[in-house]
Image 1 (cartoon, rainbow, N blue to C red):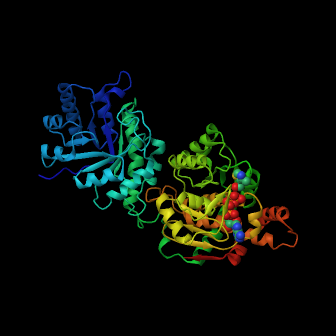
Image 2 (cartoon, helix red, strand yellow):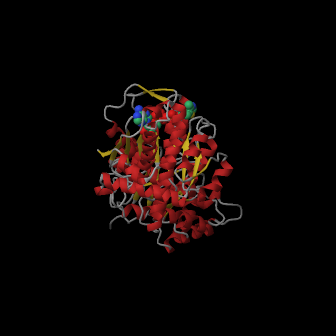
Image 3 (cartoon, helix red, strand yellow):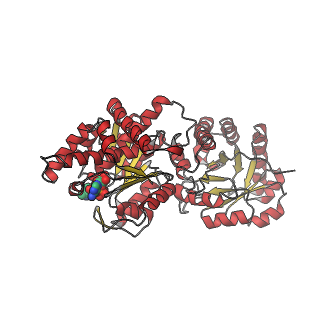
Length: 536
Ligand SMILES: Nc1ncnc2c1ncn2[C@@H]1O[C@H](COP(=O)(O)OP(=O)(O)OP(=O)(O)O)[C@@H](O)[C@H]1O
Ligand SMILES: Cc1ncsc1CCO
């Protein structure tokens, strides 16, 4: 006999103590199976052995009706007593090799891991699957107090597991609003290995309607898993159908098209930005034909999310962190482009911590920064930071840096400066327009972020207008986000070129006003004539 084929996609871990008052355990279990639970682990921490066996036996009877396998938490004796499919063990439970020697060869053994090293040992010792977590803080007593690893930590473990093909489920603090973020942000940077599913306790067990709760989770999971298996270019972060053979002309045509789309559709661009640039950013958005909304309150931003075209989060003055957390999460839930501008992130410990916190809460579509900011996120010490500015010369190999950071973060990276570098982890674009006067007005980088968000909104709308299908998509956000990011950079820098060349521009003050005018006047034709881009 061989080991059973297990569907790990929606893995329910039971917790009788978490049932809502009056809800019967077996009734709740059956409802969750009807809702699409694919695997059940019976977890009884403080129950006597006799009762544990009885609960496990009955759980198995219910699950058998639905063809769903049952695993037992920790207890080999209970597993053998009821003929369960296997066990799940933690790092401090019976060692895996001992468990393996005591159980039949067809038994499934799953192991909880928190670090890549533990994952390496799990492979070496022959685990059938691993549970990665806790991804986030959780109320479940099993995981409480353990350090949460975030989707990025889960991704590092998935990288280690890639070659072995051992399936992995994530556990800890997973709820419907963070589920899309988790799946996409945990994709391993190099191998693009991804989660086989999630393990859930409270969202199902504590629900008065476990069938509905399970069905809602299962829909998101299935959509992600289908999209990954259909992905043509598994290595790219934002693969598009034209991805393989893009030309400079092709990119410029798309940028020109996005300029038209933004003017026609006037997308709402939600911006939580610093108080130095609010006005300039709102005006830049209007100048290119979109519509700004600068809402920051957490209660406000949630309602806005379904209506917006894209979200910009710029933490220049970090005064609205709560709003940033909520708005970003909602952008992921609603699959809207999210541009993150981590102003001066390397400059202070508070900024580093805040950036970490935000990035463990939501998945950005694009991260834009100057050399100091991108260097800080990439862990490079080549470029220093002073306040909001970069100091000294740039990176030796900016193209390699943006490409590897794009892969690691699962986001498009835009590195600004005299030349701008843009990468989705596969392609690297270099854009060389712009004028040194941009460095003499405050917030030119912030406005570039605003325009990137604006044209990413255009890219999404343009995609949705031609293709309504959500399912076939491998990305959290649909549309040609690389072209959206490029359009934001080019519109800003080409308009700056035109403005700086005007006779009436005599310094930063007149340049600032002229820039707004030229953003307004810029046509797709002029942009295509003046744009200087290379595909590296
Ligand atoms: N010397 C330059 N020549 C051409 N373009 C430039 C130059 N410096 C900056 N730019 C352009 O100006 C914009 C802002 O880039 P920069 O790297 O100065 O951002 P930043 O430091 O984040 O700005 P801020 O903090 O003021 O918002 C980018 O679109 C970039 O292409
Ligand atoms: C000057 C300044 N200080 C915080 S944010 C900001 C705008 C440019 O980044």
